[in-house]
Amino acid sequence: MHIKELFPYLRVRGAARAVAFYAEAFGAKEKFRLVEPGGRVGHVELDFGAATVMLSDEYPEHGLRGPESVGGTTFCIHLHVDDADRAIARAVAAGATLVRPAADAFYGERSGTVRDPFGHEWLLGHSIEEVSPEEMQRRWDAMLGGAR
Image 1: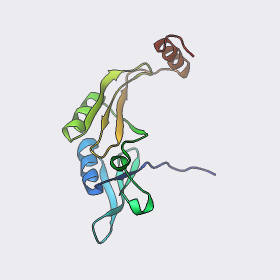
Image 2: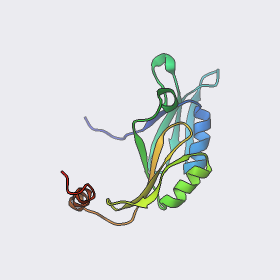
Image 3: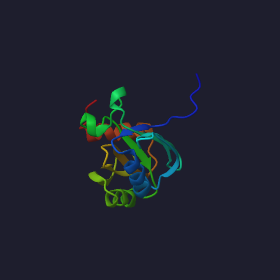
């Protein structure tokens, strides 16, 4: 098997609102959308520049639920941006909730986390230094008090 691409596929309550939020907060551009006659969004693709994110409304009759319906999310999407502080401020201004403000991290990135109005978490970060995996491990160990 050869994997060609990986697409995050988000399920939300209110896909049309989510598309508008992702455009305002992150500059995502809608590629296309499939809509049921009743207005429920069955599929939409968003261009995030370096990646495509797919999105749909919830389909509880098929077991497809978003974070609001299940009481949270189990993953975070990482957007590598040119200025994490500015990206976080833009997302919060668009309606995201600040989870963790931007800070410099041991792995060579300045990053912070926001939760979008639909329950998904986004880690927004930019590189501040190149750090080898070995140095990251050393710093991780030191941060944890040498525990391994």
